[in-house]
Image 1 (cartoon, one colour):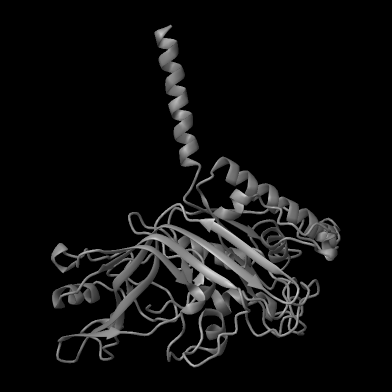
Image 2 (tube, rainbow, N blue to C red; image 1 turned 90 degrees about the vertical axis):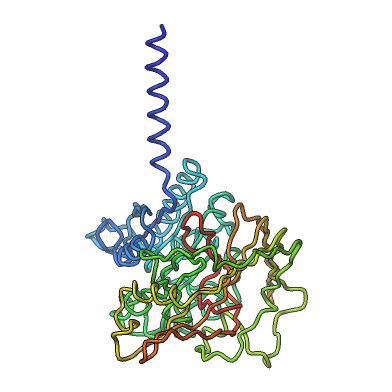
Length: 427
């Protein structure tokens, strides 16, 4: 009997181990465009880029017809295909969330694949797909674990979306109504250019296939951020030194400062004299003399039980060692260009935080709130560092400001995630 019990316990332990291994930190769902063979289609390039930036992330393609009446995909009409695809995303994402409730989820969809992701994260109705229900079909717990949704060439695009990226000023063939507000807009980016005949009113079908090559890295969630992280630019959150990170000596760390019961009004932050593109500035901040155009009563607030400030003062030797270990030779002393980099020298980390928002337009008011289960980086400060022609280390504080879009990034234990994406500048 004892042997039998031991065997049973061993089987249970093995099953638990298998279950644990089957729940990744990050899982990516991708949906292909119309008339493309089963798989990721053009979304695959972006899926691969995200996985490369987040080692250990897993992925799967949504199984749906992806058809527009073509014989090659079974002759399924576009509307029926989009409806089946919407249901397939719902089933796949809710199913994963039930099996792995802690797994972070990323959704990537191209063209019709973007439409079915759109219907799941922003809800219906979608007359083109025969969907009359306006609710979000994903479960509340699944939505909470969806950390980023990237839709490329989505025919549901309409100009004026707060999360829209690109040059289109019209809408797609199955566009959302003017003034539409997505209840989960904080998680979404939708890419559409004026040349595109499917998400806009253009006439260049080839352009419809170019979003990954045009926007590629911009569409990809950024990497982790912690004290000592190196950024090449402040308008593109791509940490340099993820693999060759130089530990910070304890003597360089300043005492942690903690503030209790801190509310951060995201609308109150602003961009400060930084040469950002007008489109980006409209998304992430406003100039110091620009009027505050938010409707009365609207807010986006992070309420922190505790707000910790972590900082360090890098020594010349630490800066030199960090630059010497960068892969890009143009930043090293041997290079003629002597290009500067940005070193993260301060972090503000929220603990026990919750987020609430109220966003209104002419037709509706959308309110949302949630509590973050873990700590996260609210803001960071950088110093510009470089090695001059004489081989001397140079260090300059950088004091610009900007609003970040509320989103998610990768985690690198024990580094808290950076929950803002877009164009991260210092705050």
